[in-house]
Amino acid sequence: MENLVKGTRVFAVDPARPEAEPVAEAAAVLRKGGLVAFPTETVYGLGANATSEEAVAKIFVAKGRPSDNPLIVHVADRESVAAIAKNVPPTAEKLMEHFWPGPLTLVLPKQPVIPLNVTCGLPTVGVRMPNHPVALALIRAAGVPIAAPSANASGKPSPTVAEHVIEDLAGRIDMVLDGGETGVGLESTVLDCTVDPPVLLRPGGVTVEMLTEVIGQVVVDRGVHSAEAVEAPRSPGMKYRHYSPKAQVILVDGPVLQMQAKIKDLMYEYQQEGLRVGIMCSMESRGAYQAPVILEYGSRDDLPGMAGDLFSTLRAFDRHAVDVVLVEGVPSVGIGMAIMNRLRRAASGRVVSV
Image (cartoon, rainbow, N blue to C red):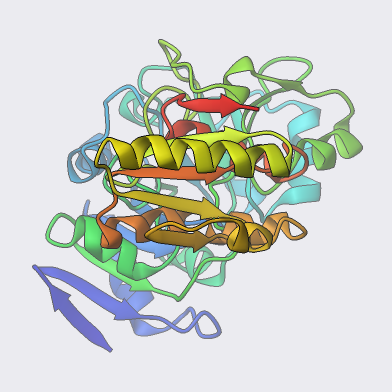
């Protein structure tokens, strides 16, 4: 079924039948240099032909994305990597074997076929094979690697359903393949394999614990645990404010009872200033607060579930017209590291530790 929204064609696609006609049409759009949003297991991506400088440039325009924020190139099989990256180390091959298809991007030396606007002038390129039937079918049908950041307006929370894409990008892109809700809910882990030991640039669904079990030592870039910008980002999500609703976000981190007490104090202070306050918390903490808007983003006993609901919950605050969002942090272990990384970026470094 096709809908037309502000000139953008939207097709519903059944992930159980990814070879359906809309995927073939989307592949033709990509080959002609157009833009297609499509589901992956992490978030929705905004795709263009990764070998076309002109097509890739359209991504930056559609999203309002800064020109020094590199893109990730998506492939449908390991054999395609050789055309995109060179001097692939054995460590990267081992990681591909264990985690592909899946939410792991490997930074490798790039081949000349990848234009410099994909990598923002860097000699390296991030490559991953998504674990989603629609994404894989689209890449195969297009016959070209697909450069794709998240399919949202730059700075906003990444899209986990097609409605988020349409809300941000309708009228700016050619087509959306609606494959339903994504799974992981956070963008892929990014690991720089051009150095030894490899360096984690962005945490995601493949955790540090999972990586070290396979390859041993992994260094965590200092930017993972802060919102400090870097001059020449080697990965998406390292420099700019990301994942934010319209309201100011303040992250409160620490033991649960202390977090709850601090959030109550901050709520009172902001309300005294005449601001409308929202609280984003675990379901276990829901009863601890009284505020105009309280949104849960899952159970603290289920961090993957919290990751899956993180961006949709942040987006929901826009509908409630709040001025400030006070967010409970989570333990920075497993996928909790990725949750806290995204929350620090959403808060632009406004973090209160208790």
